[in-house]
Length: 105
Image (cartoon, rainbow, N blue to C red; front, side, top):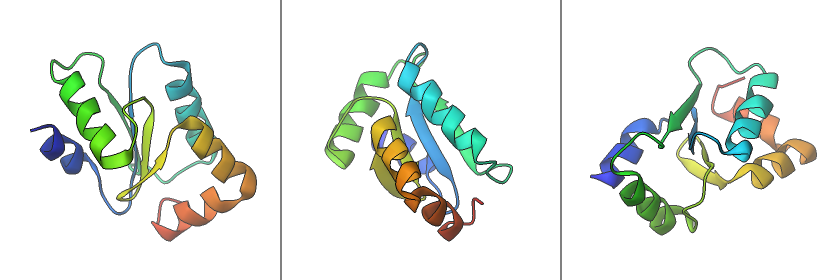
């Protein structure tokens, strides 16, 4: 069920962030991406805090991405990691390239 939920949210032309309320790195990830002015509808933040299946979703994310921490950030169907990974991609200039490749910029 957790795998189905995660996979149903991903799309080849979207950036999806799985996060939790109160997580400063989740908010920083959203702020960084919003500052890049993605096209409308290409950024989705999924707050796992209020879900009863959060542990199951995080366990699936661990199996699929190697970590269960949040944020878990997907560009298209590919998990790029967490906030520090997103920040590194941005600083290197690779983030803009990835976002253009999926049509989000």
